[in-house]
Image 1 (cartoon, rainbow, N blue to C red):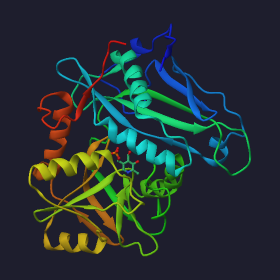
Image 2 (image 1 turned 120 degrees about the horizontal axis):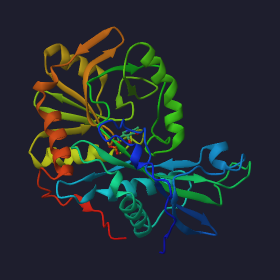
Image 3 (image 1 turned 45 degrees about the vertical axis):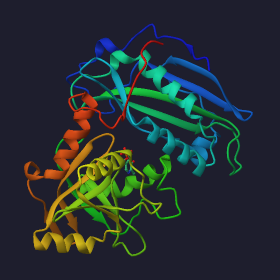
Image 4 (image 1 turned 90 degrees about the horizontal axis):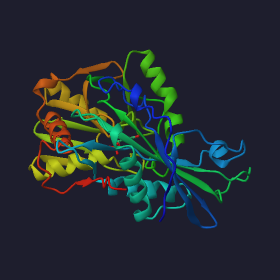
Length: 354
Ligand SMILES: Cc1ncc(COP(=O)(O)O)c(C=O)c1O
């Protein structure tokens, strides 16, 4: 696989203050792009970050046949940039592709594309612990047709952007009892744009009421917990860590995976199962609800300060007193920065000699 590289003549890097890089605000200089036609991936190239020309009738625009991933590269204290378990993202991307009738991307092509774009824009990787270069692989359907059938042609691209930690303050969440994000059998398990567009209305309503995020409940009963906004959810009840099992409606979060593996290794009591809002309220009333937190690539861990369900307000213990979520946050960020030894071999160094 030969990647043709066209470098920018106008780097944006000079204008970046690395002490002020809100997550998602800045994009790096270049992007990797490749096209799919006649049953194969071709035209592997890196070009300056720029827009696409899209046919108004493209299936991405008309029927939202598009998917994406989100992952991070961090700079180690030794000056070597590293991915954290990129295979989980590649696997999930291909799972999304299959569900949305899009072509899969062979692992070697995917990883080479990731490595090359990150290596080329390595100067964009922030150094402070908790900061990272966010990497966003995306695929969209390009065929121009009104037929509701899978597109014949696609474009895949990867762009990156530096970011400081996201959602640094504890979040107030409210359960949603009317609107849904996903149902088993739907597309909730995939990272496809429509899931996110469909969740906006409920999120905006919650924000207007003063909440940061929603806890999605499973329809039609609205009693079983799915996720919190765009994060997987964990609770600590007594001495047990619980998280919803994957029903097909919940995204298989990579951070959720890291957390479950770390918890198992450290011999925490963990239950992956159906969780009902009634038992969270009961645990709260008994004083057993010690922690609630969301997990996701952007924030790693988002402590939940308050949960509202109907007329019930649950105010959770102080963040400083939370043993599980603080340990997980420290472990994952420490691993990424090189402060904690990578004894699990989760880190994959970026080969910067391209
Ligand atoms: C709906 C949803 N749930 C959970 C997550 C967390 O997944 P991950 O830990 O892979 O970022 C995300 C973020 O990507 C998401 O969009």
